[in-house]
Picture 1 (cartoon, rainbow, N blue to C red):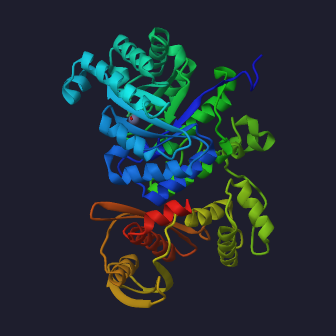
Picture 2: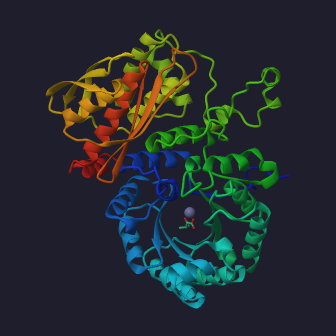
Picture 3: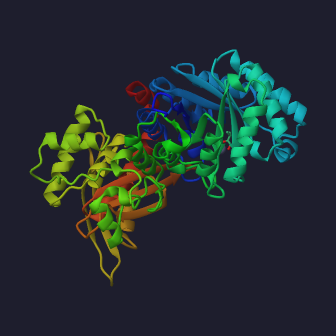
Length: 520
Ligand code: KIV
Ligand code: ZN
């Protein structure tokens, strides 16, 4: 009979900030990356890949900032198998409590011939020399054989064996293009485990992409076959169809401990908050039926299901919503609820906030409770998300009004207060009220960012629900997200637009990084 102590521990290597962030529409600014990094640390990931330092000065800077702040898990920087990339990673990770240099080099015929223009022997030599070079500066070196699944298995074992002999402590087997089927992927991992010289001295890792929707299934098959590290991202974001989703791998192992006899260090009650944060900072929502974190993941609609769940939750629930941090608390908060009740609910929802943030949130909660009879957990989450990754307010909303109708165009009036206390007001005409107001804001701030995404939804059901708006704006090839919540959808849109504008103003201001890193 196994117990928690004897269970094999699978390491979770999170790459939300690297493979995830590199996906179209998922880019994050420095402030957002730091917020996500802190959440991942609280979630309990073993390694977080913070970026690809040689890819741009901005990436180097964000890996360095995260390495300075995060202390409870290893921080990895990705490198091609080149000395200049390893030097950049070494520089970025110099203040990390647990630095990891992650080197990748492709081993599949198609990549070696057309991308690298190298022979297999040259690839093997370069893998060895880059691992040796990295080991001069860092004791924790991971080597990835890019496109390993489409590579010759014997060749991958030779490269892995040589990388381990050169000092790699982790060897990673990616299904870079999401081509594998679970059974064959499991068999391949078993083969690599059994045929790689020195494998007993290193951790065998997998990294699966989701092109055929099998990234999680393949990762779990690999774990069953002996992989000891899984690379994944929150909400499964990543290149093309994404990476294996962290929450699905972790809950697969947790719910089916009986089968895998393995577990992770993840605090699963932090999963939902991490998912919401990633949604908010990327502006990329998960589909409602997404496993574990989708809006409907714990909703029981059919009468027969509801009846069963009321009699015993185990009839239709294989895990509780609470176990992943989704609160199903029946205690209602409203305008008579005090600070303690509010603080307790924040804790139950997995949020720890400092005294200043609590003060702000409690004020916002009271304002909201005046407008809405019942303040739901989703309303509270939205308030927390509104302050967690938001930039300092260069522009504050003071007042707004719109005039609109079916026959006429729309006009919008807006009054903003700048950071020096100056007030600016403008009335503009537009195709609709949102267009009019956004145009007015652009005139006031003297910039015309492009509106790349505008999405509006209701936080809870019913017409009394708060509106939640997400926007993405772009200027000169850079992008910023904004998020706004209000009982009025026009106000939630203005808040979202202004939060994106403030992120842009802050990001473009010269002093921002010193402030961020100091405040880390
Ligand atoms: O998908 C992949 O092969 C990668 C490597 C860099 C690990 O992301
Ligand atoms: Zn990848």
